[in-house]
Image (tube, rainbow, N blue to C red; front, side, top):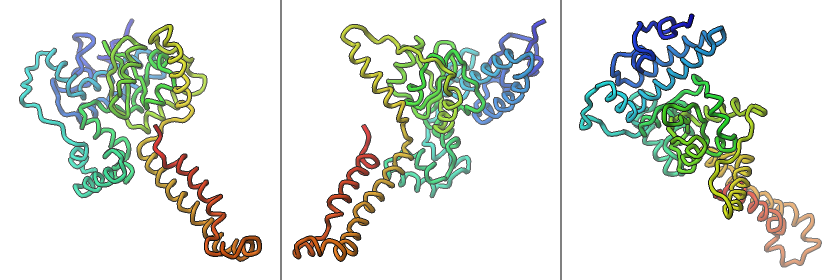
Amino acid sequence: MAIDVYKEWLGIPEGPRPPDHYQLLRLVQFEDHVDKIRKNYKKLNGHVRKYATGQYSDQSQLLLNELAKAMLCLTDEELKQEYDRSLGRVIDDRDESGRRPMTSYLQDEGAITSDQAKEAKTHAERTGLSVRDAIVQLKMVDQETAARAFANEIGRSYVDLADLVPENDVLDQVPKNVVRRQNCLPLFTDENSVVVACADEPDSELEDEIRLRFGKPIRPVIASGKAINQAIAIHYAAGMRKEVAEPAKGTGKSSAKTSAQKATAAAKQAAPELSEGEKAERKQLGLIFMCWAIVVPALLDTFVLWDRVYRYVLPRFMEWFPYLCTIFIGLPLAFLIYQTHVKPKR
């Protein structure tokens, strides 16, 4: 006899199956409080996971995905409005409030102060980082908190990847070099779209990639870059995924271009993209190394090599410019460090 997981596990009375998103997450109809929605999802997710290793493991996984899809729908501003309208809710669009910057959400939560918000914005302008990366680099909040606030700012759903198990069929369709290059993780298909966890708003390249591989548009949700990288390491570990072919984009004269694109993708896979914070840190270290590459040889030339070597083998007038080590070793080394650490990568 088939078990009614909605009734037995979630305590939902008999009625339409599957239940609507609010019933599924044990919420009052048309609940608008995002934190309440996420809190209920987190609680139910933990409860259903108790059945993941028993005889009902398949049913558990299906229900976990249903819970995730319901949560992602109800925490996405536009999708929630559409869904609520489908349930008969009358929404006055004129009552919608405008979006606020992520620093405002963090201040509301008590995560940062107004002075810290100003400091983060100043740091972002000075270093070229985004405000989100600046807040994390200054250690005001962790990456997960920053990602959640960023999701609120742009009106996207936030997802904690520790609570989700992506569908293998979806993961198999997107190769490792793509998810690493785009810093994203495909999760599952939901009706007419593909849900993909992204660290930032997806660009047109990722949108095209998903549409070509699945024949459906992308539906992005926000996760922290750290969580995405950890999930990629787990779900794309060596031997877990078979290499899939590139989606068909053209034939004939375009084959050479496709080969070049593959070569570029392979090169990018070998050298994963750094975050904005990591790039800024790498640049700062590069500038320091460049300074020392000049200073150390100059000190050697002035205080060591002239007295012990140069004065015996070089003309006397070289005493006014005894910087051979600086010219032939320091400058090339500084240039090499500039090329590898400071020069912007295209």
